Structures are given as structure tokens and as C-alpha cells.
Length: 462
Image (cartoon, rainbow, N blue to C red; front, side, top):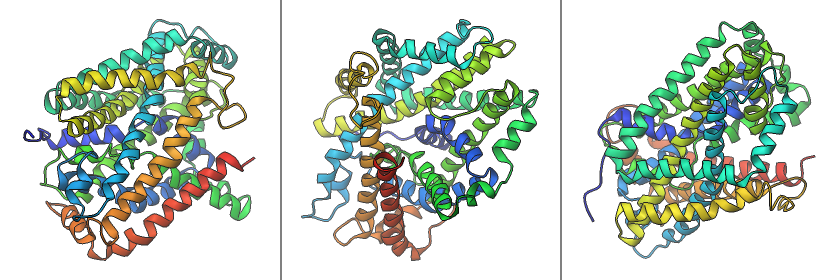
């Protein structure tokens, strides 16, 4: 096998790995739950889980990637003791990448579609949420619109990956991520000029302990569960998407240092998104929400009320497109590396084959909003997208994280001393040697609690 590529710069590694973590949840969920669950108090709770739960998980994937210099396809075989069978887990973890892309590529296509709508002035003038919601429903009812948008973003992402790590992924993604941050800061500064800035920021960040304690212990559990889930899901741990960039990184910095930098970039995007969203909502008296309705209904209505709304709406959806596309490129790079190692084939061939695979696996998600809209796999009004999200988010990702934790701490696995040595290679923040029991007991317990809470929210919560 040819010598593995490495990132040309440390900044390239940090921005691209952070790009994998930075996704739509940073924008359409984090700001809302901060405002809903106590403002600045919730931010502190979230940072606690991010550092003491998210960082260990992030270092696990990076350590396995950097030590083995292999993707998920061969990393377990490279590191596991002879005669052990940890590598059997890779098959369902690899499948998780395709499940994730089966709907994430479609949603990324939505961002492209709405970017074009924004700049073309199709958000209208003084449109209310009903009009914006009807326009979103029209897009979902049109499989051709979604298919064309999805194929466009998938072609771009795979085209970038086809050029290789340095000439494609790093050369394109690094300036794209810099532009993403520039757009976000630009929009956040614009929020200072809005009439509803003070009221919006007060709703978003004003410390309010009553939003955590009112409702007793059940409410406290709900708030902590939300913080824990956001800290976990923002990192996409469990399918090797972060690990692949560990295989390309240098050994000049400790993994704790690199991990903290990635978390800081990820949190910055999530935090600033709230400064963009809430002042706009309060300026134009639009009730903020979360999820797709926040982006495609609430904010579209807001932009239609703004002076130069077509420009601001277009800019916002370009930012959203970059955030989604960065994750798309990262996971596609993981899929391509896995395919190349499994079948000893060229990068270009791996790209062409997987482009066809992603096209096929994305069809159920697209059709689930129109021709197959009468299929409700999780009951109620659930769609095929909801099922795919449930499979990856509530099953493959957390159980994949458990496998990583077990692999570095259980007897017969890679070994905690090997993990510790890899983490502390290089300059920077070092991981203490007493962390074995934390990784062996605390991290798995938190993941099990996360899984239990997810299942409760889907099947039992009213």
C-alpha cells in the first residue's frame, strides 16, 4: 500500500476535523435548547459534558486513527492482539456511515436549494410562517427538486475527495471553513444593529435557574440529558468519521490539545448561531423553535421581513450549506478510505462506486416525503428520515462509541497504556495516567444513560 497522505498544515487538520463535527445540530438545535434550558447556566452544563465526556470520546477515535494509520476498515486488525476479534464490529460501524449519508446528503441538498431561493428573492416580502411552511412542503412534495439538489452536493463533495487529501479535501475545505467562520461573524455583528438584539440575547443567554429547577428532579434530568446528548451528537463519534483524520494528522501535538481546539471551534459556531437567530426572531416578532422548522419556516419568514432580505437569507443559507457540506466531505472521505483499504482499489474508482451507492441509499429518504409519505416506521407522523436518524443517532453512534471505549480498556483490546502513550505523544496538554477507570466505567455509564434517554424519548415520552 502506498504511503499515507498527511495534512500539509495543522490548521488544515483542525479546521477539517472541526468541520466534521460542525453540522446542522449546531445551528438548529443548540441555540434553542440553550434558551429553553437556562441560558448561560445551560452553556456551562454543556461545556462540562463536552470536556469530560465529548473530549475523551474524541481522543479515542483520534488515537486509534493516528496509531494505526488505518481507517475503520483495518484499524482494529492493526491494533488488536493476535487471535482477538474486535474487527468484527467494523461492519455495522461502516454501515453507519451509509445510513448517516442516506439522509444527511438529502438535507445538505435542501441547503443548496434554499441558498438559491434566497439570493433569487423567492422568500417573498413580509411572508408569515404559514407561507414559508407551505413553500417548504412544496419542496418536500417534489422528489425531482430534492434529487437534483442532493446529486449536486454529493457530486461536489465526492469531486473534492477524488482529488486526494491535500489537493482536494484540505485545499478546498480549509478556505471553505474559514469563509464559514467569516460569514458567521459577519451575521453575528449584523445582529447588533437589530432592534430585538437586547431582547433576543436576554432570552438566549440570560442565566435563569428556574428553567432548570422548575418541575423538580424530572426537569433537572431533562436539562442534563439535553446537554449530554448535544455534547455527544455534535461530534459524530462511533463510525470512524473522526478517526480517519487521525490517520492523516501529525504527531507533533498531544491529542488533548488538538481535541480541545476542535471542541472550541465547534462550540464557537453553535454559540454564535444563537446570536444570529434570536435577535432576528425577536426583531420581527417570530416565535423561535428548533429543527428544520426553525431554518426553513421561522427564519425564512424573518428574512422576508428584512430590508435586503434576499441578500441576508442567501448569506445565511450559504453558511448552512458550508456547515453541512463540511460534514458531507468528512464522512465521504472516511467512506472512500474504508473502500480503498477493503478492496485495494484506487481513490477515483472508490469515488465513482460510492457516488452510485449514495444515490441509491438516498432515494428512500427523498421518497418518504412524497410517494412513500404514508409509511410511518416509528408511528405517528414519522418519516423514513426519522427512522434513518433513529438507527444512526440512537443506535450505531452510541454503540460504536461503546466499542471504542471497550477496545482501549478491556483485556484483550488495544490496551489503555497504548492509548495513553498515543494521546500524550507530542507537545501540549497531557492526559493523566489515572484515567483508566474513568474510561472503563464512567464513560460507558454515561453512554448507556444516553441510549436509555433516547429510547425513552422516542417510545415512551408523551
